[in-house]
Length: 202
Image (cartoon, rainbow, N blue to C red; front, side, top):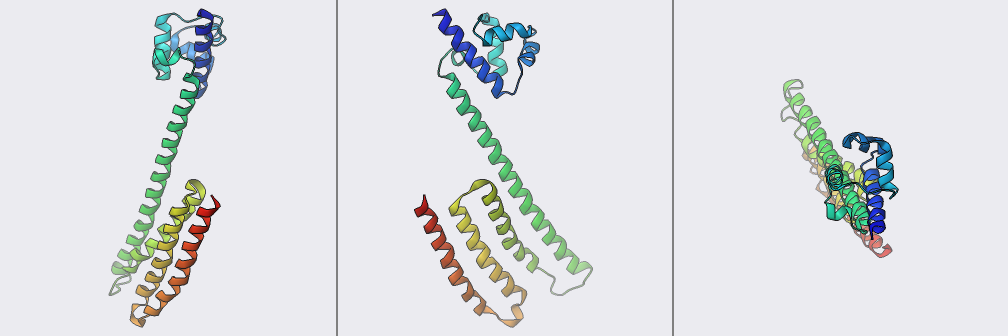
């Protein structure tokens, strides 16, 4: 029985250390122990005493019960995967928000420039409208790079389609180019058919 516990603890300690990107030397320093002791624990040659086990639990952020059970290895990998997924999603969301902020910062600069420097009347308020298709393009790029979501791709493509047409219409509003929106209908149909095709391919 003692042999089984040694083997279980050894395997879990090794997995947890590697998941934390620590060396045996790093763990030894944290515990104020020798590298050889850590190596013995991970090779099931010996079992740490209870106080050391508790310290190891604190280092790895697990419970003693977790450390001494055979299925902990799979649980540790799942936990690490969840953490990585959450971290990646936070990074993606932050990147998207920063990109959108930059687009509308530039739009604001253009708007203010048209008032203060160019003395335009009315000012270039359409810059804010043009921000929508630009942001849609950025979302399509990030979706292709990271998310690979077909529904999001279809939504962004639809917004891109209609927002470009709206931007062009508003940019040249004096010409009353409302017929331009007819162009968007076949494009929208293509987008919807593409979404349907991608769903069937799954």
